[in-house]
Amino acid sequence: MKLERGSIMLMHVVNINKDVLKANNELAYSNRKLLVKNRIFAMNIMGAIGSGKTTLIEEAINSLKERYRIAVIAGDVVAQMDASRFEKLGVRTVAANTGRECHLDAKLVERSLADIDLEDIDILFIENVGNLICPVDYKLGEHVRIVVVSVSEGDDTVLKHPMIFRTSDLAIVNKVDISEAVSADPSKMKADIEQLNPSIPILLTSRNDRVSIDRWIEYIESHIE
Amino acid sequence: MHEYSLACEIFETVIATAHNNKALAVNSIELEIGRLTHVNADQLLFCLEVLSRDGIAKGVKIDVNFVSPCGECECGYRGDAGVSDNVRCEDQPPLYEYTGLTCPTCGKLLQLVGGNDLIIQTIDIEI
Image 1 (tube, rainbow over the protein chains, first blue to last red):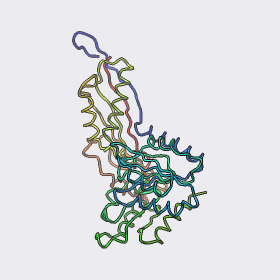
Image 2 (image 1 turned 180 degrees about the vertical axis):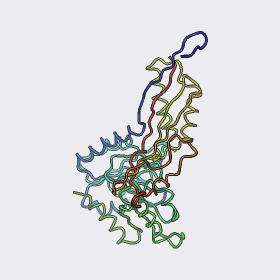
Image 3 (image 1 turned 30 degrees about the vertical axis):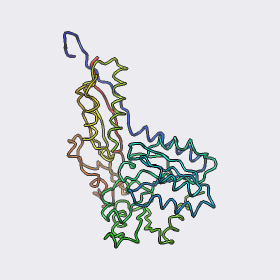
Image 4 (image 1 turned 135 degrees about the horizontal axis):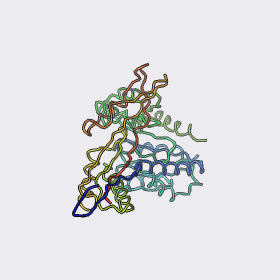
């Protein structure tokens, strides 16, 4: 209790105990239930800017679209470029613009899911905003979290972003065909990922190496009922 | 950088709670930040300071309790992973130190449990 300007003011402690990040996780859980109900396999593709997320998804769409019904949620801060790349491949595409945020969150994904006929979809790619940090704290409702880095970000990029490798289900080191040109050692990157997360599967890929792309496709298909 | 939107969400909750309790002023806010989140405490506090320049939360004091994850190992070891809580923001160790922690008993990489929250614990108001 303290006196101020002649009137008595009471000090009072109010318990709030609200977890600001938990609200997102609860929404992510309801997204997941919706996806499971519609028997959709959903991937959250996270990764650095320019690491090749869009290209890897395009390759997967081209290989899988004859056999599966595919949709893409293309996350970007403002642009529609990625979304139009997917639309050209003839799959259902929703552009999720975050406006000023550095990551997709469960609310944006919930809104995007409302624009998709979920009964007509088997596989959902959710391409996150290019960022190795912020997407870690935000679950979306996906079945697997996939992190993509490329050799051109430098072979020390894995150790600089430990949490995304600790919390992902698959790690992809992309553009390994240009390693020499950018003086990066993909085997160091692989070893760094193994050190951070000994149980994570790791793929070394290049769009010019069909065998490596086929392994990526096999990973996806191995998760489909 | 999503500290500003987190700060806005915290601030809205604080102000709504204050109004519901017919508060004349908000003196302090107590936050809990898990050390495994990517929330930068300095940036978050700066954003909260900017938001509270006017109104009933003007000059509000913000106390931060950092919470470490717990380290668990398949060998059965279970213990606090990291440094003691309530250290100052600048002493927050880099995430890499946590993610590289090994079991003191068997040497395997520790599984980290908890330390992922951002919680508004209490507010201290004048009524």
